[in-house]
Length: 220
Image (tube, rainbow, N blue to C red; front, side, top):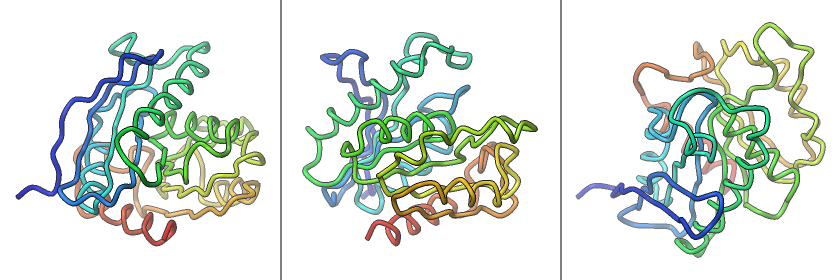
């Protein structure tokens, strides 16, 4: 039997709507993970699918969802005015998942999705049990002075950061310095040889399982 089932998920009673794909484990542990995508991507990103499948195999209910800006238009990056509504969309996803599971809820995503997740949790520290941030975009490539860590000092949620060793959005040293600003517990998992996409072409090896094991160790 499969370790999980996957089906389209919608919650249209909330504004913005929650839309994505729900991975339901065969043997649930009553905890859930919500994952969102990067600026130019969507909920069908190979990275999100692989990580969601790995978490579901470990018993977690996983929701990978399209942020509100992606629901509004099928391609292109978010605009300057999209961030606040995207964070409200994440908050609505949390509310929707509280109807699905009785245990802990974790939030995160890739790049822009992870950044908005962390900003939401800095604004409202009791929303989730922790964060899973894949390729956090610490600064734009080749612009190390334009840091996106102003909210880190208010981040009270424990956070697992998964970071490619060749990610142009931040070196390991820059990430380590930034994480020192976070008052909550943090863990930096570096992926040797990986760039910002972690595995952009196809999910190879056991990276999604490694992320799941690091998560379980950190949040046990």
